[in-house]
Length: 307
Image (cartoon, rainbow, N blue to C red; front, side):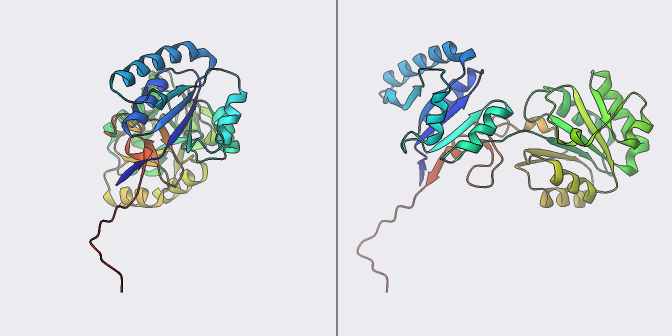
């Protein structure tokens, strides 16, 4: 049977919606949660926690299940990362790269997190042009600042004459800056030259790096070299290319002919998420109610013995 993990510590910055999401998911999964929000959202988080405590009281549940750290002093983060004398079972950081990196470096308890979202879209030689344009445009430009936003576009060399410029034109028409390799720059004079650093950058802005690759194998090699193993998409009609992409890329979320911005617990049908994890143990991808539980075995007998 499924069992709660215990006490979840959530360390986040300026988004008070995390307060409501984390509190609700913790209660739904039978866990307790300790919330440490940033100074920008502290008063909003306090108000939300007060509302949830009223709800717990009315439902006859222990109000101690949801607690907000009553200070914005950064020393509190350090104490949580130590595990509060064994009282925190898992840490979930939400925020920018710097605080998440600190959590991953210093935590003495398990962490559900992703450091950054260097997300790729690969346009295969079998890709339908209309799908390639619409999916890439949505993956990059729907919301440029979220972790599922595409940051690098890879295009198979065979469709450069037919697909490259229409996709780039659609992106630039929406105000997206293109940083491309030599082939991209030669095909579209409005693009800028990409540097080595661009392939490793999570822009969180209307900027995308674009590279032409010789094969699906080359696309996979590039992704495995530069990806943060968060989310990748392939636009293709060839089932063999899709299966190769799915089987050989080690990222938490893989999509076929769909926008990378579907990388979300709500979109996956989880009802909500406390974050997205890219680690390989326990929870991976969106962390929802089910991922906030472990399991144990209950065996009932009537005198049986093992020979």
